[in-house]
Image (tube, rainbow, N blue to C red; front, side, top):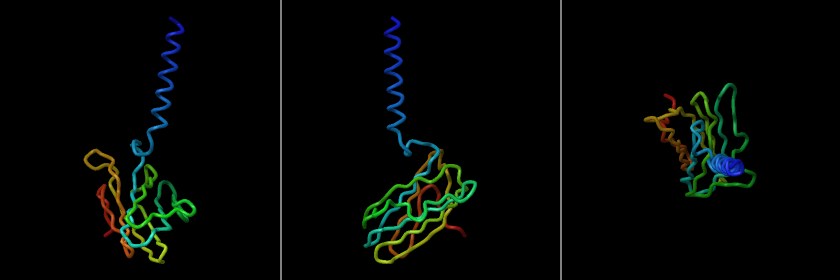
Amino acid sequence: MKQRRLSILVVLSICMVWGLLSSGCDLSPRSKALVIVNDSANAIDYVAIRQYVSGAKMAYPNALANGETIAAGESKRFYLAPYGDNTVYVTVDDDALGSASVSFTYDYLVDGLNRSITATYSGTEISVSGSNAQLPV
């Protein structure tokens, strides 16, 4: 009987560890997804994301890995720091020397849900949508 309890505890522990490892940032209620969409004809080769928590937190100089790009028509998901001041600055450059920057605010929860923010790069500007993202007035 003691051996059976131990086996059950081991199985439950393994299941719990597997569940924690398999649930990524998408399931974390503390992170905010920012999806960069490349709607231009050129590959994005630079993405800088800056936000303030208690001090500046910045994915700088490049949030993309060395040599990584976001091809035309593709997108990449990044995660903003939890508990920021809800103001984000994004700069995108492409391999044809195009560049755009935008700052915006957002709501952490919309209708009680943590929805992602989409930032679409056109080659000349960045538009934002989702989570009540708004450009400053």
